[in-house]
Amino acid sequence: MQKEYIIAFSSFYKAAYAEDLLEAEGIRVTLRKLPIELAKSCSTGIYGKDLPIERVKEIFRGKDIYPRGIYLMSRDDNGKTTYTLVR
Figure: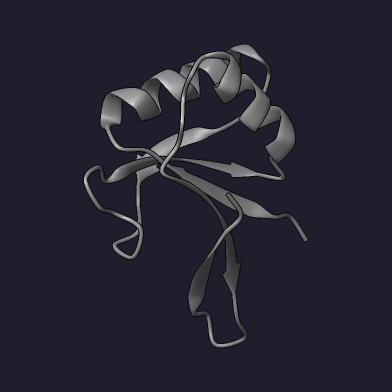
C-alpha cells in the first residue's frame, strides 16, 4: 500500500515554489487544495505518494523553505481520513 503525504505551507507562493523544486529533483507531486482539517492561513498544499520524506526535507532546508507541516494521510475501514503530523 502506498503512503500518501500532504505538505502544508503558509502561502500559495511557497507551496508553488516547493512544488517546482521537488519536480526539478524528479520527485512527483501535485499542488492541490488542502482538506479543511489542515487549511489555516493557506489552503493549498503539495500531495505526493511514497515521498522520500528525508530527501524532501533536505531539499527544503537547502532553500530555506519551512513547511507548516508534513502529514501522512490514512483511511480507516469506514473511509474516514486522518492526518498524522510527521514533521
